Length: 378
Ligand code: CMC
Image (cartoon, rainbow, N blue to C red; front, side, top):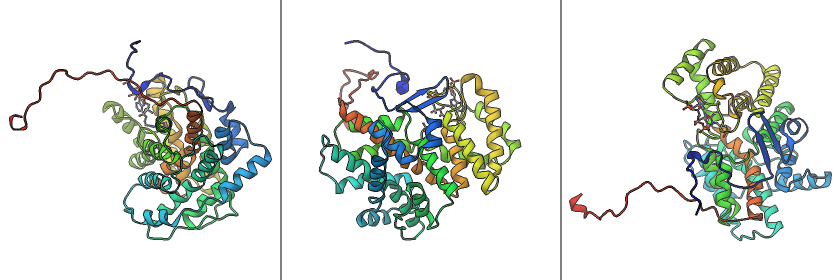
């Protein structure tokens, strides 16, 4: 058997063949099924982009209408899931609540029929439709309120924002939120997608696939970074404090949140679009002083770390956009999950089409021939 070099973090090791998305990290290019992200952000909607990723082609008008209709009418969650969520501690993180709820959904749909396109479609629709309802329900229940029923007359993103506080959102806000979902929906073989594919490769159900990916997304080095960016900006507090903060991070070798990427060595193209969206929100709804701090951070980090290819990633500006929409900081990562579930499902479907269970190897660096020491002699 060929012996391969061990690469921590599997850097540069292909884990799958995929035609879902493509990144050129040197040029700052991201494509979904060959279409540039900038074009989709300008012209598409989240549900249309989700369809593109999962079924491989842009939908016709009728196909899109049918998909939107199905998602719209599957938004309600079962009362048993709601009752289960009511028992979650209000101090718990919404990502943990989401992971548990997504897994619990599988209890209701335990009949697995992975070779049946109708089963695949139903599962895709159900997960894309109910994940936002579960996120909004936990948000209200942890404040002691009843969840708000989805509104069938509102589009996907407007309905989610409505379910958070029973107010119909401003149309610009709803459109910008929808674009954010387009930007967060898919990104090649990142940690949570890898997790989804490994779980999918065991031929378990799609609820387990999504639940395992949600758990992976939550970590601060992955989707959880967007929350930490806002906490960092709060801690820095003023433009004058930026340089000393960054110098301190460099001296103590701690990571500056929202910067750096395994693949991008230039500014993440999604960060460029998000920065523009943040500016649109500031123009209409008022300035945020955190934006001055963020821009100064970008300047100082480029000066200090630009030569290493460390630039803002998607999480640097997404937090500022969500903050301006009045969304609580600990919902930023669950919102990332609302988007990314469609990407995970595209990978689930692709994995099933040519499945082989993931079973990598390891480089053993432990001991051999050790004798057992009885407990009273240890
Ligand atoms: N701040 C300071 N230094 C950094 C940073 C950063 N944010 N990111 C990378 N570096 C340095 C790192 O110290 C190392 O330097 P040296 O070679 O001198 O030891 C070098 O760059 C390579 O870093 P690495 O940690 O080995 O790179 P990685 O590819 O394993 O990690 C990363 C990528 C995203 C985990 C990392 O850049 C990081 O921790 N960033 C901060 C957290 C963050 O913003 N995460 C969101 C990632 S993007 C969206 C997502 O995946 O969800």
